[in-house]
Image 1 (cartoon, rainbow, N blue to C red):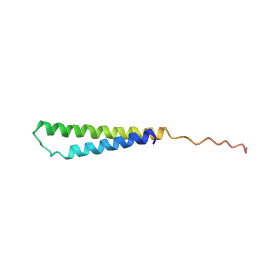
Image 2: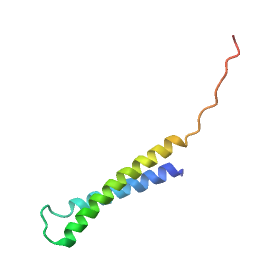
Image 3: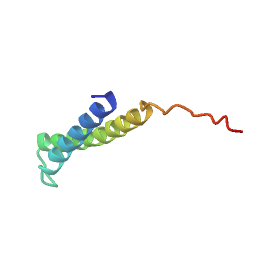
Image 4: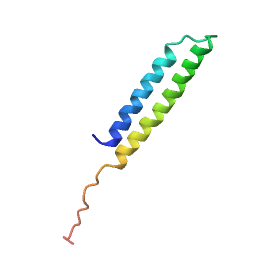
Amino acid sequence: MKTGMVVTIVGTTMFVVGLILFYSIELGQTDPVLRSIKNIGTFVGLCGMGVVLAGILLHFNNRSEPPIKEFDDV
C-alpha cells in the first residue's frame, strides 16, 4: 500500500475519533475533564482533516505519469 493511502486512512480514523470525542460530550458541561475531552476531540478532528488532505496530495503527487508519445508523422 502506498504512503498516500496509508496517510489518508490514518487521517480518516483521526477525524472519526475526533467526531466521537466531540459529540459524545453534551454541550454546556462545567466539569473541566469533560470540557477538555471535548476540546481534544475538536483538535483531533481538525488535525485529521489536515492529515486526510496531506494523504490525498501525496497520492496525487506520487502517481506515475504516462510516457510522452511523440508523433513523427509530420
